[in-house]
Image (cartoon, rainbow, N blue to C red; front, side, top):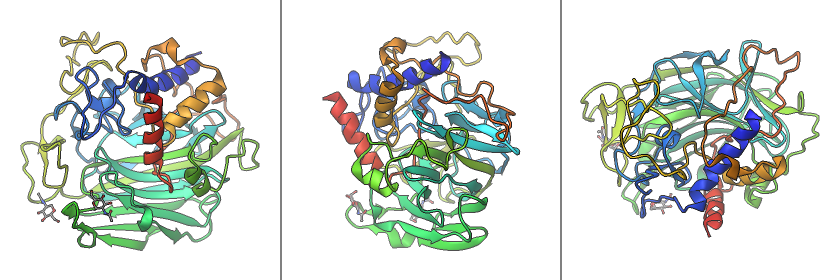
Length: 443
Ligand SMILES: *[C@@H]1O[C@H](CO)[C@@H](O)[C@H](O)[C@H]1NC(C)=O
Ligand SMILES: *[C@@H]1O[C@H](CO)[C@@H](O)[C@H](O)[C@H]1NC(C)=O
């Protein structure tokens, strides 16, 4: 029941924005009562204002909660101790380093990302941002057509650095980067992996500095892109990832018939939900030992503190328009926003400012295929989005998952759960496709 609610809630959250035309773009920002622009131009409050909130589409430059600074460390991901469901997380990253959408299980002290039929897989995203650093993850990817495993860096203004693994090619990692959401797919490069990506864990690293970007596998640098080679004379800037980015690791169903043709083709075809590659009726990918070594932020920036990265120009988000300040914000509730955070120290979270309208979505949907997926899965599970009026509350994706032995089977049925998929851009154009589909829903 709870899961059903979550399913409906996410779907409703995704569609509430559409239904009430709460959309934002760079030309037409989100409205005051749903001020925070999500990754797919949907607008909302609460979780919309935390990770993934885009200043270029949000109502004001203060709508988004500034992103917490980079935290060097080793993140074993061996339990849910460090992980919180996106519909619970309010911005206090002092104890929680990862946000979750989906249902992981734990096996051999490692996190198993699951994807059962009718779900959109599992996504974890760091609650802190990296503004240059070396980020490594040990992964075993999932196998089968239409199934994609991803390890990416994604900034709130849609700079992106990707490792993606298509389930029909277990011998290569696909690498790519994007700048401010411009979908230039010509830079995709496959990097061979010794052995295969499924049966053994390999270490994938993204080494990201102000001047260059290196993808390495098992300690060997395999691809380097220099900022100096990315000058775009049309936009007069470097098309190079240069804004603080979250780490995202996910397993998601690119091969759903409701997705765009290009997406399905890229992913190797439609997903077979009776596949021999499934375990316990789920596709799985294993993540462990994510490590982060933070590098210094650009030397020329303004530092007014040490806690958050704050955009100072909502029109031109580059390495030159971000400061480090102490404007650390924890929301009082998922009804609050960066403009009106409420008083988080009051546990009952009575917010003082104006309440958002009932229709303001609190938890984003509409990830690559998320809008599509919300649609599909809602239909499949028979849930009715209107039951939840767009509230993300009552959701619990994490209950009882901790400490389960994957080998012994789990109680994770997963069925009927709608979760966010990963954010890897589809080799076609997930962003474009999803935006197009959400656009259609509005009309
Ligand atoms: C250069 O920037 C323009 C304007 O943002 C964009 O439309 C174009 O796709 C970019 N060129 C490349 C090669 O990405
Ligand atoms: C941003 O990048 C440009 C080009 O690489 C560089 O010249 C500039 O100094 C950087 N800005 C800061 C604040 O470091």
